[in-house]
Image (tube, rainbow, N blue to C red; front, side, top):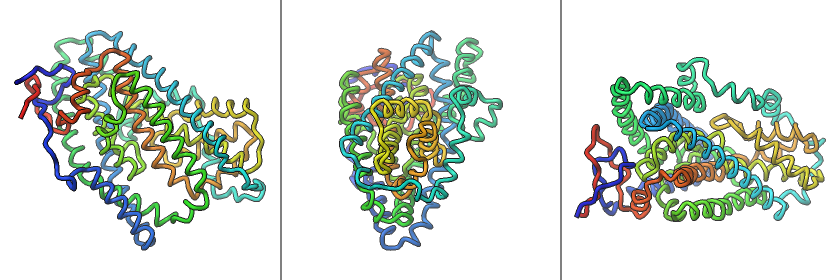
Length: 455
């Protein structure tokens, strides 16, 4: 029996019922083993382990190598194939509304948990005796941090070549949107360019598949370096604030994203199982960018329209960092508690308001979390910026929670925006979440209409 598949599943020639794969060949199993092995090596051979950071660095660089073309081609193709440009504006507005609501709720989740658990209570730290020199690079950068108008200006590239060379996601996104609109308006003359980008994107995704084969090595190097450089002792000494961040992120994923998934008509548990390879890879590498190309492709093939994926997922790196929002609110209040700095409810809500502005646009910037915190604390004046020293030892261990929550948030957000826009292919999504679609099959040029095939 054969059924015509919906047109939203653009790239695959055939969707086949997935066959059982040997467990040791599954990417998430390989990454889990690599993470455990890296932690063991980092604990027992820290000097050797710290040298293995090069493995993680190489993997992240390989991912960033394909990031710009994936984002650019996906956005251009998605917009160029739109029949109505009003659709683009509608998707953009809905995406921004979702980003702001989700980020605000994430900040409130962190605020609630940190006030309930009080991780800094009783530490009685004298801020005047803290050695602020160890965080001077972050506080110095905070004083130079751009305002919201500078952020908007920076999103417009003065050179397309420079935007691609620097890998600036917002600038690439901006140019991609403009080119996509231009191609949609020139009619038949755009067909050669669209056909070329289709073929080029197929080839780039093949490169992504090659790169993902070495994801376990990247995760191994990252975890070995983390444990080797910082040790397990720092986890024990500041375990309560770690618990706060992880608990807040877990609650937000289960409750917050669970509610979004329910309202959007899909199962969060099945969805998490669907993207588990990407989630575990992010946990191992502590980088949301490390799975961005593969995640975008998965979402497209699972029935989320290309324009939605192209706008929501890359844009979410800057505008929808829910895990980072949770971390910022927990960290700021923790420092206040540890230094016995009293904060009224109004002052805490003011901190959240400042964080909503200062946290935008920091994706992919080394030390961006500390810079954002420093800028926020400096703006508030009441919380000592030198309190950042308290987080130096455990900040790296909180990166896993932040990155995983950010990744899940952007993936859920893409499906939610598509559902809200009524452009989500629910039949294809249901088949993907049930494991009935081989979403990792290599696409072919000029595919025939896809069909479901019973074995």
